[in-house]
Length: 97
Image 1 (cartoon, rainbow, N blue to C red):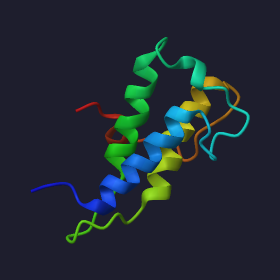
Image 2 (cartoon, rainbow, N blue to C red; image 1 turned 120 degrees about the vertical axis):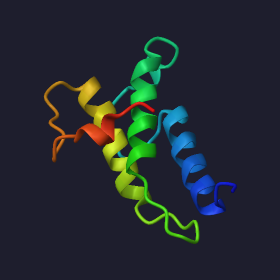
Image 3 (cartoon, rainbow, N blue to C red; image 1 turned 90 degrees about the vertical axis):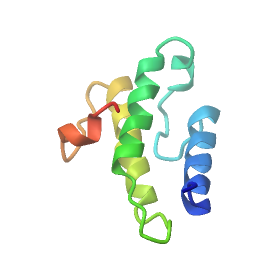
């Protein structure tokens, strides 16, 4: 089975904004400078995104913005120690598969 165009589009859009340094959920956070320096940060961001995103039986993404929020909150908390992720991450969200 191939990934659906709904998921492919959601992943492509998330990746575009993450790599451009302009994700709207990260205003004022200069995370772009971390590329090439701290790859494990982005590994965790994408793991959270992949673990949280839900797809229905037809391949349609059900919670794309929520998956982005959980993933970008991790990056925000990494860059800004005063930011608290709410609700706190559960182990399954952080798992690296």
